[in-house]
Image (cartoon, rainbow, N blue to C red):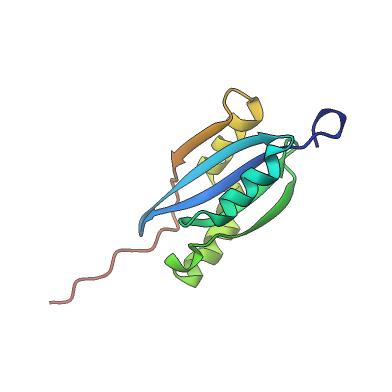
Length: 121
């Protein structure tokens, strides 16, 4: 909650771009738009995972996105474990908390991307 009980959320979505590249999209939503924004993220076709945080960094909600099945179950579990410690995610959250912008997107730098398939001759 924000000032006088008004909601003020940071909504983070990990978006599938390709097998070895995801992006981190963040939106700061206030008041009436918080739940609408969160619901839009949940319905987005390329979201792998989403997190809703308050302005103190407390996780209010998180869960799989519609495109969770685009990545292997082991990769998804590692992503969930690493997400709040990931440098790119922390950077996006920091920008939203600072209030310099209400929307930001960055390519996710992460060591957990699956290795490319080996070519067999």
